[in-house]
Image (cartoon, rainbow, N blue to C red; front, side):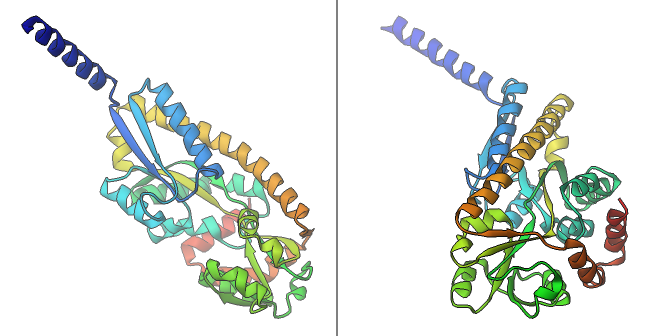
Length: 322
């Protein structure tokens, strides 16, 4: 009996020792707002797989989609406090770093290639440096977001076609000022109210990326997707600077390399998803309308520039000159 007890104790100790040997040296809590089907989450899953494999289990990545750790600002604050480690975030970063406002300025970018040039140039480096310095967050990768497009029940090809169009916009002063300058009648409204307001003709139009146009079923109350592309933006995957710098150099390198692979993977998913969205909306009866984007950009520019401070305007001008 005694021998059996001793043997059991030795086996138990061996099992506990084995489990502790398998425990990760570093655990990264990665929270974000997207659901499991979203391409942001799919990219995050890819990052987790790469980091855990390439570190031989020394790093564990715990994913928390669907705002499980709170909304965007909650998670940023948690990272700064050290209770979370990573998130996906966008122009909210301008609360700390004013240069991050460039991440969602109307008509800053001509197309996807122009946006990529800016993000990967000295302009992007300036924005990232300010985010790291002032928000204590290190951008590891960036994802392009789908451009915001205007939906309506009549085709809009030129700013003159807006002619007082009652248009829902988010409660963002720059968006309101821009659409007023273009000739529309922008109305700030909660997203949850938009479908009913369109149904009841309280508003006549709204603007959002194709992904939200699809998920909100705006095809049931709007006939046209006018390809205004008025806001092209991107987001960053960020990690707390203190957290990153507390890790051994070789593990920091594994995290950075996995983030770059995640960025490439997400770009492929994004391209496929944009094509799928356009086809799906057309199949549901929406007509896509080509727009004179140069005329829109020219008419919007005074309102956009008036809303920017000197530092932001210098960046905006640099983007235009790329």
